[in-house]
Image (cartoon, helix red, strand yellow):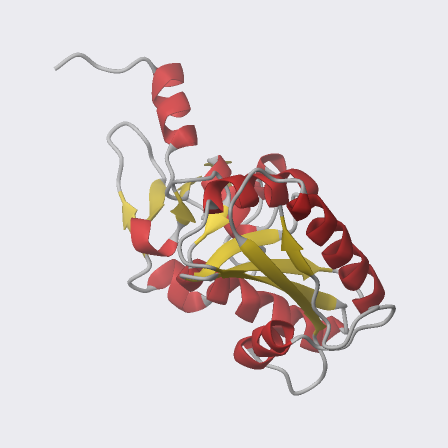
Length: 230
């Protein structure tokens, strides 16, 4: 078997849809691919030099069934591989599965409890059967910050997690995305809702309020939804 050139191997790992991280013997991250960066909500360069504890990944994500460590020949550290069902969706780069999004939600809610950081989310509910998710997802990815999280929450819902985002900014973004969705060449109807974390919320209640159309600051309609159709 012909050995791959190291640079080619790096490029192949980088475009894998599943998150991959390389750790040295001290447990410090020396390289990650784009899918791993999307999973933890950081830029690729911001992951290097930290440990998994620094990234505040949930223990069950890093040590449980969701990930496995393998020893790579010629590499003194370890490779952390996240299996496909819990990582990034392969249709549009950076779109997490529900399981991966729940892990991020739990981590962000823990951070909000500890530091009182604002945390909001948006839910886009797609009506009318199976729509062109990929087109809508690409539009969302183009509009979001690198720290924001986009996930397929269910067969008919997309979730956008917005760390460090208060209610007013979340509702403004929700209105902007609804307007942009009207211009997409897709045959779907989208209902938009937003919510902002408050004491006592867990992942389920935060997302459920967004799906139900929580009234947010500056939100112009009741219930808090905008209906968008091409």
